[in-house]
Amino acid sequence: MLRDKVAQKRGSMNLIAAVDRNWAIGKAGRELVNIPEDKKFFREETTGKVIVMGRKTFESLPGAMALAGRTNIVLSENPGFAPKNTIVCRSFEETKEELAKYPTEDIYIIGGGSIYKQFLSLCDTAHITKVDYKYDADTYFPNLDKLSEWEIKETSEEKTYFDMIYEFVRYSRKK
Image (tube, rainbow, N blue to C red):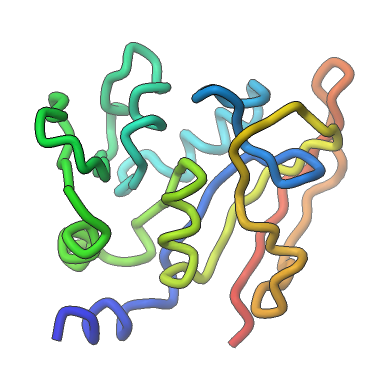
């Protein structure tokens, strides 16, 4: 029944990430790039919404604290992990049960790599900041350009931050 509820609601959960040319998102638990306009976009998209992340992503947040103005849901199998101002789920199934309480369009999957992979099939929109550079990385986002069920719906003009070239791209799951 719960699976049906999530399946019925599937259609508007979001993924949000900044990726390099190889769809890399991190190295050694840290983001690859810090672009102020990307941070602003992330803040605007997720404030007042539900964000879902793994423990390592949570620990990479400033001060390893919940992001203000959002419902922070953290997936961690560690029974001793219980940070303030978060909802901790111990499994993918438990996380899906928790997410069923919220409107799907208000849910943003924010990382890391394994969390993106687990939730990809439940999402229909991906907000991707594409950085035109290849970083040394150990964590990746699924390459939506190689997945036939995803298509680009909107692309910003090319932007620069110092010597970095990037653009905002919105992908949608094909109907």
